[in-house]
Length: 393
Image 1: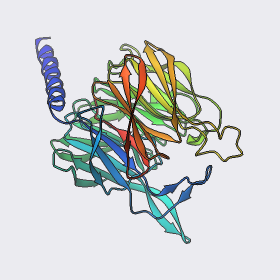
Image 2: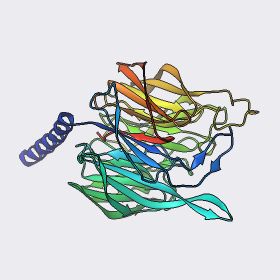
Image 3: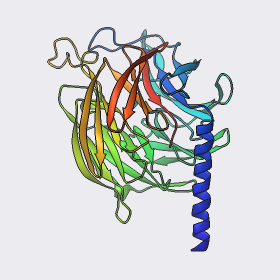
């Protein structure tokens, strides 16, 4: 008992030290900008010549006024949940995956699975690429542990999860775990002993057990959820996870979709405990660092649906839910313009950021408890944002 207490205390001190170090320095926000997809004609997707993708890095040390500190020419992709990038808890590194690459076939550009993961040093001025790893095919959602020593990447085209060890500024692929189905996103619990993987095409959530660097897929714990689950997050206290379903293969169609609440209470296996109506196609999704609210972005129809579709006139929306145990209670719905794709919070949860693909901008919102208000602050981006993330917690 004495040894375990010491170990727990040491772990708590390490996590506190990492958090304190991060708070003492700069805080960053990442935006993945995809130039290869054109939605200029509503309801139609055009694939254009690649070459001008960027990873935009913002300093949010003053969270009310983000400012761009770097635009790195790195391949990025709109295709995948907007969680293909994340910052380590100590704010030293950013990991960014390139899910899709463009290939020319029969005189036209077409997407194909990529396999690259970029490692960016955030302590240099300006931030710079320091390594490129080849991992699984179509690497999509990324999760970094709260200790900052482990990262998991969901590989959609390989039906697997890549396991990455982080040691200082060295990132190494140490394992690949087969999970049997396509996976789009992944989340690590705050305790670091489990991860949940989103099986988007088979409508399930899988469970991985984590013991140090050993990751085991527990197939017997697969949970059935709603149609086309696509994003997931875990509350800071680790009591629940929330899954966002886009339905309709990831596109809006005018029909409402849901959020699933997964009970992670100790003493029993993870299980689906509740469903809540969110709206049409909640793709981007995040839980506040305070654990008070969960926020889903509805894609809207004005960009993705043709003008003659009955739901074309719907704009993108921000939907705010209060978290009460296993219940999610809708608090607000705010119009967000055409195709809102990314959402993130400042480390203390006092500010929220929402990116808009069509508008090429990041909007800043103030968070007061469960109420969100638009500050009017907009930061123009040099491209179309398809993903957004801050630091892992």
